[in-house]
Amino acid sequence: VQLQAYGGGLVQAGGFLRLSCAASVPAFALYTMGWFRQALGKEREFVAAIRRSGGVTYYADSVKGRFTISRDNAENTVYLQMNSLEPGDTAVYYCAADRTVRDAVGITNRNGYDYWGQGTQVTVSS
Image (spheres, rainbow, N blue to C red):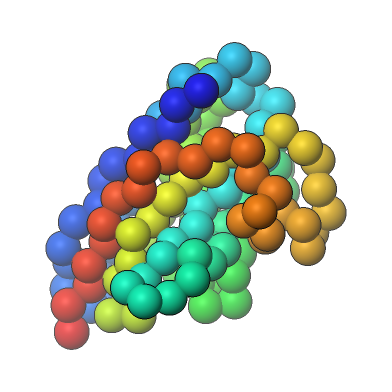
């Protein structure tokens, strides 16, 4: 199983980026997909998650209303559209896949995810 995240870069505050995560995993549609981020010197934190069908999504309060997670099960890809970026969004962003169906609390727990991508750096300048 491999997850390849890409799309990061340097952007000014107020700008936008779209992250993608391509998954080489059998039965991609059976996985909950999540995005997490880790800023320098901080723990990895939950950003967003999307359930198997794509009909239910979850967001951290800090990104709600600015970020949108989506998936294309035919392309084995999950996306994170990030708008109105702030310097506080600067971090390495990781995509992750979880085969287990979890509740709304469990889905935000990084320890529950089975597979992780290598991360893509997002830097927001003020």
